[in-house]
Amino acid sequence: MGKGGYAESKVIDRKRVPATPPDKFSVGVLRKAIPAHCFERSTVTSFLYLGTDLAIIAALYYATTWFSHPAIPGWLAWGLLWPAYWFCQGAVSTGVWVISHECGHQSFSPSQAVNDGVGFVFHTLLLVPYYSWKHSHRRHHSNTGNVAKDEVFVPKHREEEDYDFNWTQMAPMPHYHAQEATEALKPILGPYYKRDNRNVFRALWADWNACGYVAPDVKGEGVLWYRK
Image 1 (cartoon, rainbow, N blue to C red):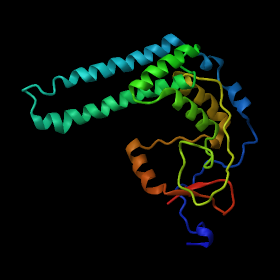
Image 2: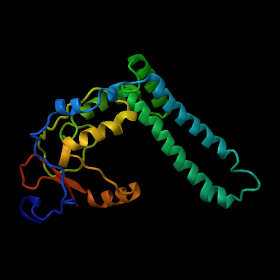
Image 3: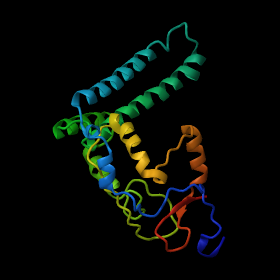
Image 4: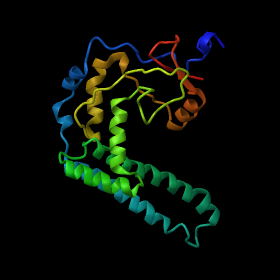
C-alpha cells in the first residue's frame, strides 16, 4: 500500500463523472431547459398510477389462492410460483413506496394535504414512518454526496473531512414527467450525464464486489471515489 493508503488503491471506474463544478450551466439554466408542463402535478394522474399498482398487487395476491390447488404439485408451488410471487409483489410494492416517496417531495399533487395523506397511509402500510422519513429524506437531499453530513448513504471512507457538496433542489416534479425532463437536460449536461445500462443483478454483484470504500486520489482532496 502506498503512502497514506491511497497510491495503490484501485479505482473501480476510470470513466468518471467530472468532479469540477460546471462552468457552462447552473441549476437555474437547467430548470429553464425543462418544459414548464413537466412541473405540473395532476392529482388524477397520480391516483391512476397508484390505483394501477394496487390493482396489480390485488391480482397477484388473488393468484396465490390457486397455489394450493390439488392440480399444482408442491414442488412447483414452493420452487417456482411462490418465489415468483415474492419477487413480483415486492417489485410492485416498491412502486407504491416510490409513489409515497413522491408525496414526501410534494410531487404527487398540488395539495400538501393530499400529498401528506396519501404518503402517510401507504408508507404506514409498508411499515415506513412517513413524517420522520420525510424530515430525514429532506436532509439527505440537501447533503447528497457529503460523507460528513448525509444521514442515509454514507460509505466507508478513509479520511474524516467535511466535503461540502450540497445540491439545490428544483421544484417538485412528478415521476411521469421525469423521462421527458431528462431528455431536455442531456444536451446541456454533456459529460455530467451518466446512465448505467447494466442488468440490475449484474450491477448489484459488480458494485458489491468493487465498492469497498471511498477515498480521494490525493490525501486531503475533497472529492472521494469508490475503490476496492
